[in-house]
Length: 213
Image 1 (cartoon, rainbow, N blue to C red):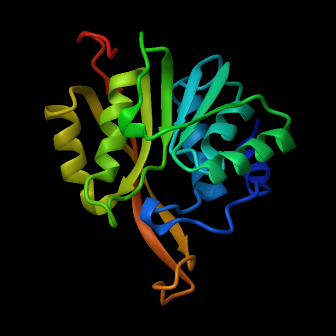
Image 2: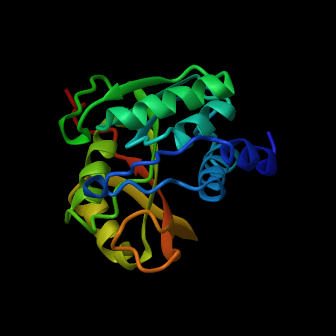
Image 3: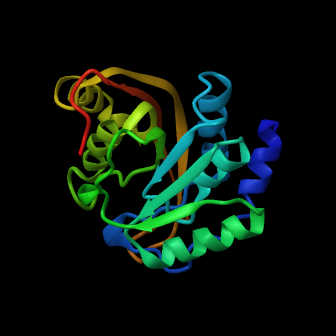
């Protein structure tokens, strides 16, 4: 599937009309989502025939992109029931099989590194400090292959240092810098749209350590 076609399909997905600010729910736009998954597949082979998890899946954009690019099995995890309901409808619309689990990522229990690749657009940690790192920490515990994640460019040094020193990642690489368009979703937003610089990261877990139970 070509990048333009993937972008177009993701642009048709339904998004939440009542996002929750306490969860920092911002939709992952089709432009960023398509490039994240397209890079994961075409540069590294981390999607096709893989088991892919979408952490904080929201309305399913990243996970469904993985499905469109030939993932063997896709699982979306989110704490919000409404988001999972919309993501399920989006999966039906695209005629894709995708499983969904409602849970708090911090309490996730997966055995035997059953996940090959984790894709995620975690909370930026603006409303709740450290929320982004909770997602990254868990992803590096459960993935056997790679993690693709979006983080604010201003946190680049902190992300790399923490991933390598504290979360035992074997590699942490910024693949590119992207522009995340944050629409005017909440009352405190004064501007119609804000452009936030984000890094697309690829992390590889250290699989020599004991497996997460």
